[in-house]
Length: 129
Image (cartoon, rainbow, N blue to C red; front, side, top):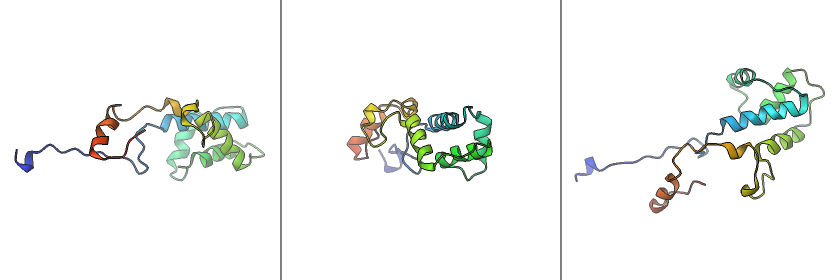
């Protein structure tokens, strides 16, 4: 087969190599974090509006900003907000065994077929876990 007709394959990843759809789990963590501190849940439109401003990519900061905009006072310490957010997102120790995590992270769907990772190993590509 001439070189020009040899099948080629390309694997593309976003900037941090994520191959799971994390949007739903992170947004749920925002909703539950705001609810934890304020007692009500922001709707998807409120989060979309905030995110569309282009400066709230950090979901901890976005959670704090939603609390601020909703008039929550006093605002929680940032470290406490992060702890609560991560409890919802990871559902366990973020530095601990991922097999013990029971949070929203477990609901993230793969963006590739499960057979993708084993097919990469023989080619010397890093494993997707």
